[in-house]
Image 1: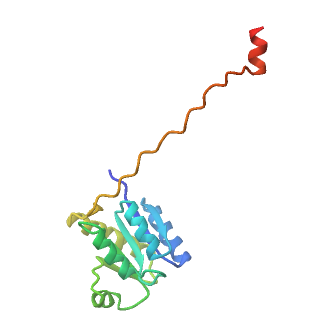
Image 2 (image 1 turned 180 degrees about the vertical axis):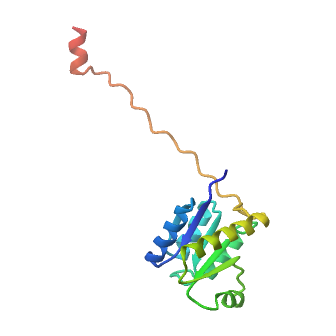
Image 3 (image 1 turned 90 degrees about the vertical axis):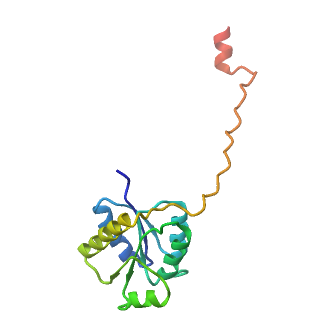
Length: 163
């Protein structure tokens, strides 16, 4: 069974910790980012089952993050946009963003888990995965540290034993 790994992108620490606790309690491995830029970097470096992103974050909002994720992957990583904005779906449509789901703040633990599981199911049916469009750059092989040559001088213990 593959690991279910979720990225939470949320700038409000209280909500971030709440979402993390709920999802970890349901068996997900959770990574966290407090800005959209940080979240995008994590998406580039890791494979996620899905992303839970706040709409309003510093540096890059959830709409832009969703669009950037769509550009990165052949079959986009599903994104659940969490928002306090009542008309988030209309706003997403107006900005030409297609989140697979939205969740209105404030939400219950059950509502978050239901949205995540529904999104996970939709993604599986659609054959979504986190396969990058471009292969990640190969890392140069690391050189092993030079081996220390034994000292020709004998230490005090060796001198004592050789007598």
